[in-house]
Picture 1 (cartoon, helix red, strand yellow):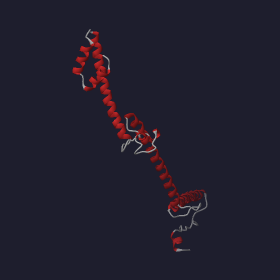
Picture 2 (cartoon, rainbow, N blue to C red; picture 1 turned 45 degrees about the vertical axis):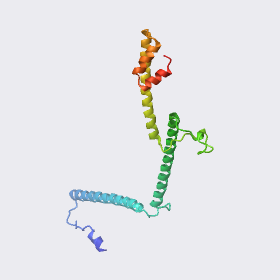
Picture 3 (tube, helix red, strand yellow; picture 1 turned 60 degrees about the vertical axis):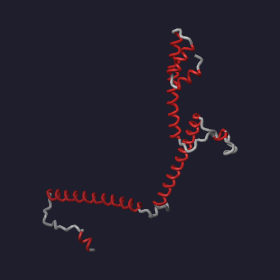
Amino acid sequence: MTEDQKAYRMPQRDYSDFAEGPADAEFLSGKLEDAIGIIDGLKARIAELERENEILRHERLDDIRPDGKTILDFMNVWLDQARDARAKLERACSRQNEEICQTLGKALGYPWFKDDQKNFPGATEADGVCVGEHVAETVAEEAAKRMARLESKLAEARAALLKADYFLAQGYSKDSVRDFLRKEASPHGKAALEAEDV
């Protein structure tokens, strides 16, 4: 017996002085149940420690698993998958940015590649418009500003036409109504009056 075994050895007790009888049997039965409970608890703790040890053993990065791979192998696969997903996302974002720039650039009147055959030989309508250094956000900002200006011009032109209709209904001549509106109209309103046959 080693010294460690001696240190953990339960002390032997001399039970020869117990008289045989029901009270002694109950006492010994209680002690036996306590000992069984302690043993079961120790077995459970040993099983738990063995599970933790197994987990820790496999957490070592260079440990070879039953399938012949290490944790590093799995990490490299996961890293490759993450890189692939990132590349797909970047391609999708780039494609979306190009589509937005082309759609808004065409609406805003950006120059077509096909119209500059000197610099872009062989360019067709499919090549779209040249938006330069713009990205979707800057083209969208330009579109929003232009929309706001056009809405303001449209509101002024509508107001001028409503006034013209009112004065014409009051019996004023077309020429006098046009002259009056030209004097008070902004440059946008004047352009609208020139375009309309009031």
